[in-house]
Length: 271
Length: 271
Image 1 (cartoon, rainbow over the protein chains, first blue to last red):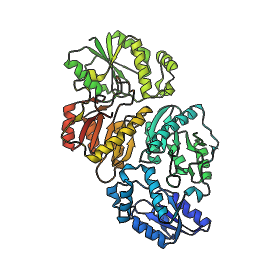
Image 2 (cartoon, chains in turn brown, blue):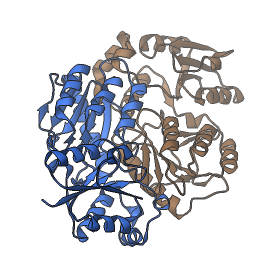
Image 3 (tube, each protein chain N blue to C red):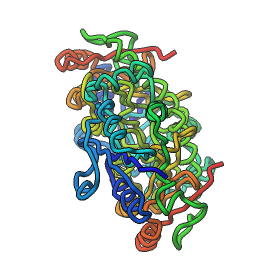
Image 4 (spheres, rainbow over the protein chains, first blue to last red):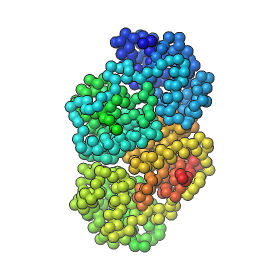
C-alpha cells in the first residue's frame, strides 16, 4: 500500500483514520478543508489546508506529497457554487457535470471519478478502520420489541424514498409517526430536534441507511458513540443501521454507551 | 345552511372562520381542543372545550348544540395512543381502523368518515373563508427567476414523494440543494431551521403542496401572512404553493407582506 491521502472534513472520522494509519505504520498525508476539518487534529501530522473550491491546488499538494490512495474522511457542508469560489480546475469540472443538477451522491461519484482520473485510487474508510462496517444483529444487550420493529420497518420505507431522491439517509419514527426526516442538516441536528417533537409513550427509533446506489467510498452512513449518546438524550429507544453499509466508529464504545443508556443498536438487512 | 361546528385546533384559522361566520351572519359553535386551540378566541363565542381523546363527549356536545355541518380549523399535534387517553367512543374507533398503521392523511379520512357516520356533514375551510384557495400565478410583484423555477421543480418532485408516504407537505430547496424537509414539526419550524442551513448566493424557495389523495376537508396546505414573514426572516426568496389546493388566509395581507419583504409568492399547477 502506498501513501494514503486523507481528505479531511468535519467530525471524528479524520482523527480515527490518522490513528489507524499510525497503528498500522502506514504513511499518510492529510489534506484538510478550511472551515470543515478541526485544526486540532493537524498537530504533528503531515498536512496542508485548502479551500474546498481550490481543486487545482489540492491535486498539486496530493501529487507533491506522493499520495497513492485517497480516502474521504468526514462531513463537508455542501456549498453553493457562489460560496465555493471554484478555481479554474474546479470550474472546468463543474462545467463538465452541471453542478446544480446533481444530488450529493451524484456529485460525490463525479468527484471520485475526477480524482481517479488524476491517477489516485479512492478507497472507502471502512477498508482502513478496524471496526469496519456494521454486522447484522444487536450490538448490545437490548433488542427491538414489536412496536420498535414496526417503526424500523416504516423508517426503512421512508429512508428508501428519501435516498432515492438523494436527500438524506436518516429518519426518526415513533409509534408509526414520522417525527423527522434528514435533509442537509445532518443526523445530529435531526436527533436533537426530535427531542422536542417526542410524543408520550414508547420512544422513537433512528433509522439510518445508505441511499440506493450510494457511492460507498464517500459519505457512507456512520454511527459512533456520539450518535448513541445523542439518541439517548433525545428520548429515542434505539438505532437501526444497515448491516454491511454503515461505518462503525468504535464498536466497543457504542455497545457500552447503548447498554448504559438502555438503547438498542441493531444492524439490519433492509432487503 | 345549518349551524356550523368549528373543530378548533392551533393557529389563526379558527379565529378567521369565526369572523367569516359573523360576517355572513351564520350560526356557529366552537368545539375547542384542549392544549391546541388558543383560549383567547373563545371569548364571547358559543363554545365548549374537550380533550382530543374524548370523542363521545365531543359528539354529544355537537349534537346538543344543534350543529349540522362541521369544519376542521387549525392544526392538531398528532398524539400517540398513550397521550390521547381515548374514551370508549374513540377507543372503538381506533380499534376499527388500526391507529398505528395510518399516516396523518389516512387517519383524517377515517375521522371524517366517522363524523359523517354521526350525521354531520364535513365541509372544507375553503368553502367558508372568502379568500378560499390559491389561484394560479404570482400574488405580488415578484416572479421566480430561472434558478428559482428550477428549485420549485425540484421541490415539487421531493414534496410529491414525501406526500406519497404521508409524511409532510413542505420542502425548502436552495440552488438545487434540499435544505430541509417537513415531517411532524410543521412548516413554521421547517422555515426557521432553514435560516441556519442557508448557503451563500440566491436564497431558497419554500414549496408546499397537498399530498397525493389528500383529504381536502382537513389539513389542506395553508399560507398566511405569518408564512411570508417567516420565509423573509429565514432568507428565502419565495414561496410556491399548489393552485386550487392551498388555503389562503388573508390574500391582501400576503401580497403586501411579500412585496414588502421582496419575496415572490406563486400558485403553481404541479401537473
